[in-house]
Structure formats: structure tokens, C-alpha cells
Length: 418
Image (cartoon, rainbow, N blue to C red; front, side, top):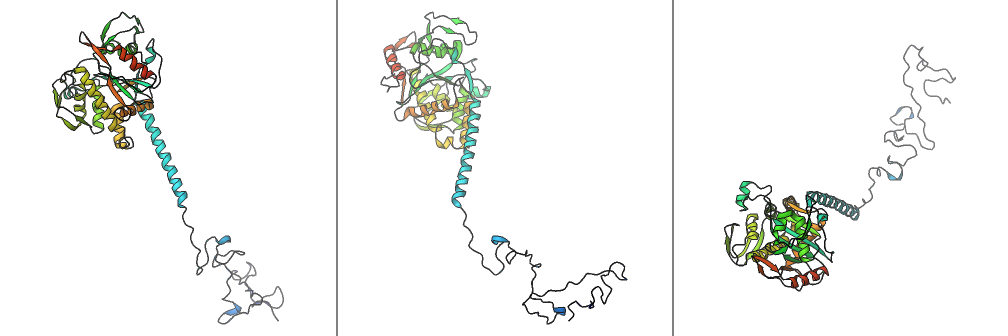
């Protein structure tokens, strides 16, 4: 039996044709026909095919199957899925807990980044121009924190049109239009107005610019004269000398900044018990609840000639308004809303002057303490007055001493003012 493919003779090395015998042949060498090897035990089906070719046999080349891998070309462990016709297993459900955790973590990182950026942005806008280290012979610090809050009549940065609109006049320099001590302690905040016509002694002091020492001559004058004479440092020195209370921080805001803050938050709602007018400040108010814009708010806190006790009544209005301003500003709706928060901060911080050791955090604490003046355990009052001399208001020394002791010991304030 001849086991060789067609075209071969029985003798090895001899074939019946000349194909495939090298380049010397008369015809080019063609592709060799490889013999088909039939697996053992499998009957050969040659019907309709030459040379015993088995169409049922699949070598795997057409499907991309790799020898030694499972059928279907999926590789090991079922990668690539089962072959056609075989149902797939159930898909694995999404891990929503993990997704929620990752999303929450990303949100916290974003909020933290924005908060830190906002803090440094706002902190950098503070004008730290007051050097309390220049204040000499200071009283010892007590418990709690004491802020001296000053509203000045500075017209810095205001145009002629703005001065006319706000009825500020065009005086050069700046003077104190209002002065308050805010004590923030464990027994609730206490806000004490210092009438600008208060009769005080100007103590010895070191000039804030010259560094020259000025002795105490016993000179008595209005409290606001100290600011006009040598600025914030002498004002702090005078307040500390006449009260015995240590001032921890100084905060000052001018006319323009005050009006801008009010406008930035959309006005301040206030209940005015009695109608009044004042040509000098531009005030013209009806009784009842109403929302004051920046111009109206400035007129409200500056009005003095419409009242019988001009300076004392004005300080009460200032306390009332500042408490309302803080209550309507220090809210989640303002702090968490960038469309309200950033304009408010920009309007206020550009004109706020503070001491060199004051941080934005301390300023925020002061503002929230101001908010608490009208609620909870908060107290607001004027400095106790015993009479007047030469048109200046004289403090009640006994009551002032008791008040300062209560503040220094962070006790509940029981002293009442005018």
C-alpha cells in the first residue's frame, strides 16, 4: 500500500511531477499541499470532498482559539465571556456605598479647600494699622475679650457725589463718631457705649508717630478729642486710663464702609418706635418696621439733634442698629451663600482698620458676640453717667468701677447705665 500522497512514487526522492524541486525547475515553485492527518478513531468523511478532507474538523484557527485554552477563545478563568449560546452569569451590582463615600470625601475636600482659600483671601484684606504696643502703662488683662469698636467720620475714598448723598460734609481728617466697648465672656456679651462727649482725663502717652513722651497734665476734655489729637493709640490709652479696663483689640470703620456693608446684604430691617427728622444727617423716618439701605442706616446712627438727650439717645440707636446688622449678617444664608458672603466681605473689609494682632477669626468672634447682645444673656448699656460739666458728660465713678470689676472677673453684669 502506498502511503505517500498523490504525485509521489514509491521510491523516496522521486516524484511524478517537477513542482517543488527548487529554482532550477522550468516552472516556479508553488505552494505545497499539506497532507491532512485524520485523528485516530474518527471516521473520515470524504463525501463531496477530495483527498479525504474532513469539513467537520475545526483546527481552531478560524476562531482565534489558542491551543490549550478552553473553547470559545476566552482564555483562562472565563475572560472574554462564554461562547455564543451559553447564558452569561448575573452582573455584579455597583458598590453604591463605596461610591457615596468617595463622593462625600471629594465634596469635603472641595469645601475645605474653598474655606481655607476664602479665609486667607479675607484675612489679607484687613488693614492692620493700629499698633497697641505703643500704648504705655496698660492695665492687666482680665477674663474674656474686650474690643474697642469705633465708627469714624472718615470720608476717605468717597467722591463729592457720595459725600453729598450721605450728608457727610467735606471735613478733612477723621474723628470718632461713635465708640463702644464689647466684652465677650462666658456670661454673655456686654456692649457699652462711650458717649463722645464724655469728660475724660488725657493721660501721659507716647506719640504714635513721633515716639515723643507727653506727660499727664491733668487736662480734661471730650473723649473724641483723644482720637483727633493722636489717633487710635491715644484713644485706647485714654479709655484704659479712665476705666481701668484692658482693651484687647481695636476695630474701626468709616462712613463709606458702613453704608456699603448695609447695601451689600440688601438692607437692615429695623423697628423705629417714633418718627424723627434731622436735616444735618439726612434722617427722615416714620414709625414702624422698615428696611434701611446704606444711606438711611448712616443717617439713623448719626442723628443726634432730633433727640432731647442728643449723645445718649444716639448711642442707643447705634447699639440697636449694630445688633440688628449683626443678627441679619451672621446667618447661614449669608455665610454659606457665596453670592451674599463675598460682596459683604468685600464691602466691609476694604474699609475696616484693626490692630496688628487681630486675626480674621477674632473679628468673626466679635461679630457673633455683637449678634448675641440682643439675645440670650446679652446686655447693652451706656456708660453710667452722674452729671455734666461744661457740656461734657461725667461718668459715675463708683458704678464704672463696679462695672469694670464685673467685666474683668467675667461675671454677670448687674450695673445699669443711662
